[in-house]
Amino acid sequence: MLDKSSTHRLIGAGIMLVAAAAILPVILDGERPPELDVDIRVSKAPVIPQVVIKPAQPLPLVEKQIQYKKLNKAIDTPVIKSKDISKKETTKAVVKKKDAVIKKAVVVKKLEKTAKKAKWTLQIASFKSRSNASALVKKLQAANYPAYTITTKTLFKVYVGPEIKRTRSESLKQEIKKKFSLEGFVVKYSAN
Image (cartoon, rainbow, N blue to C red):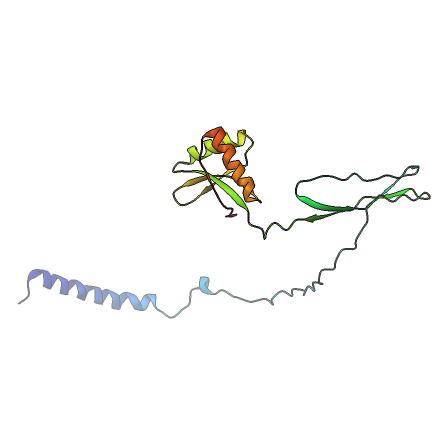
């Protein structure tokens, strides 16, 4: 014998089956509703013209010329002195009397090959806080020393330099020791 809740469930399932048998033939009569009749047509794909790209051509060299109608004297170009330039070659300005055309001076710079040489820097201090390191850098820069910081994982290191010659870094060490009472040590420069 079944309890009351099981009998109610069986009666409800029977009523649902009878209702489905009566209503489903009306719904599923086989006719397609007119709103579902959609005509889908695919047009031809657009024709994209093929673009041919020519390889790049070098630009022609153009001399800058300044035209003067009346010019009586030849002009020499001044030689500019710089710390980084070891040799300079300059050409003098050319003056033509008929057209009075002056060509600009061409300066060829030959720089020393310092990349292969070892560079040296002076490590002054290491700090845990950025503010202390920045304060020391500002103090050193105010005294015209090329000071900078490098940050490692936990420390802020203060350096002065770099210098090409180790002897220059050693002399900076002695100057800073006298002026600021800071003991540093010379290390190889690394551009990290």
